[in-house]
Image (cartoon, rainbow, N blue to C red; front, side, top):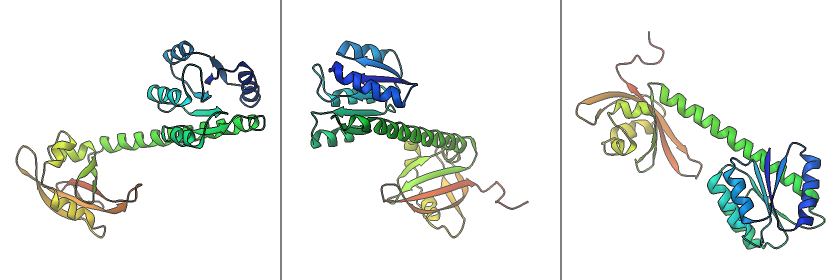
Length: 238
């Protein structure tokens, strides 16, 4: 596991290395002492973890954080510093910092726990993204349309099958259609409905629509719907 240790103080780097190698013997730790070191380390390829001080002679921890996240968005970053403030910690967290530890004699032993937590959260996010990608790939591969729309009736997401059923090449195309009947049918979770929708390029298509209204992660209501051509047999029919 490739780890960048960014700290101007050689004594602090020794203490940090001691704690990390004791708890994480598989870490390959690279000392970053200057801008050139960081540039070369970033150019060398993916990084698994960054531990940075806030106050550096040549930069700040916030700038390092933004630089790392811009190049490697999923790389966890832990700030270990004695010069930060609550305002800096809040700003860093908003910029994507994974943890913030005050640098003091009593807190060196806390650093491995912070690193372990940051790595676990990063791994959990990675697994969630992989599951979502597999799910998205599956939806794109099947010939059943799936879509999500906000309460105002604007389509937020739709798989390739939805686009194909309606003759659309993109979400923008899809949003140009009159989908009021389709969305109204998708609001009702109690039954499946048949609606007729005008396709892009001309002609109509009869669609079997089912769905419901659910709460999104931001607390707003969204319509989730499933559509298929009426020419297909209904589920359970022979």
